Length: 340
Image (cartoon, rainbow, N blue to C red; front, side, top):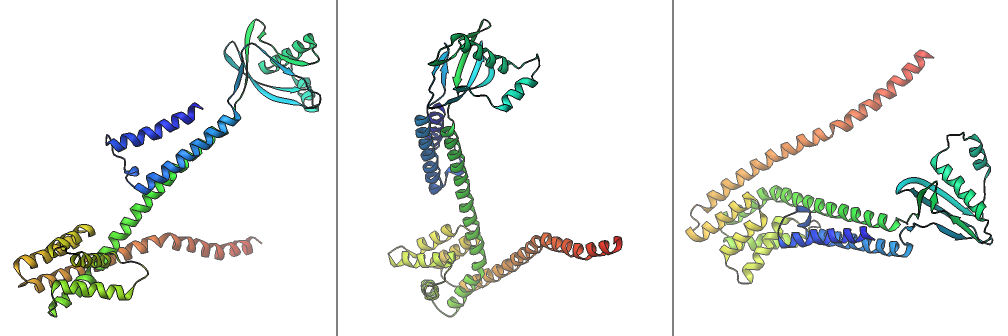
C-alpha cells in the first residue's frame, strides 16, 4: 500500500515543482505528453492500489498460529519464518499433511547436517504430534528457546502493476517527446528545401510588376488550388500571412510574424527584405531578391550533396551484408565439393 502512495506523491510532487518553475525538464514541456504520462501512471497506480487492497498485504503471526483442519478442503500455504528476528527461510504447510515420494526420498538422502528449514519443519511436525489436536494444526511460537515469527507473504501483483504502469507512462512520455522532436526536425528540413523555390517564384512575380502583397496572395491561391496531400509548411505560413492581412493586420507586422513562425534565418532575412521594401521603397528590391534566390539555390545544392553522401553511408552496411551472403553462396559449395 505504501508503494502506491509513494508513487502518487512522487508524480504529483514532480509536476507541482515543475509547474511552479523551480526546475525545467524537457520531457514535461510537451502538453500532450504530460497528459498521457499522468493518465497512464495514475490509472495504473490506482488499479494497482485496488488489486493490493483486494489481495491484502502479508499477515504476520508473532505468537504462533493455529490452522483449522478441514477434511473436505486442503489448506495449502507457504510461510516465511524468522528466528529471533532473522530470516530463516520458508516452510510449506499443507493440511491435511501429505507427503510425496519426492519428499520421502529427499528426507532419506539428508544426513546429520540438516538445513535450518528442514529442522524447523521437523520441529513443527513433532510439535503437532505432541498437541495431537484433531481440529487444529499449530505453528509454534518458540523453538529451542528462540522466538519464531510466521508470515504469509503478501501478493505483490498490485505493486508490480503500478511499477509497470509507471515505466509504461515514462516510455509513452519519452516516445511523445521523440515524435515531437522528429516532427520539428522534419518541418525544419522541409522549410529549408522549399525556400529556394518559394523565393524564386516570389522574385519572378515581383519582377513581373506584381506588388508584394499581391504576390503573396497569388502564391497562396496557387497552393490552395493544388491542395497537396502533405502540407508544405512554408506555403501554409504564406496562406496564414494573407489571412492576417485580410483581417486587418498591417503588412509589416504580418511579414515579421511570418519570419518568426518559420524560425529559420533564411525566412527571417526574407521577412526583413519585405519590411524594408515597405519602409524604404522597392528600388533595389528585385536585385536583393534575385541575390537571395541564387544563394538559396546554392545552399540547396550543397545540402543535396550532403544528403546524398549520408544516404551512401547508410547503404554501406546493407551492401556489406549482401557481399557476405554472396561470398557464402560461392564459398560454401566450393568447400563442400573440395572436402567431399
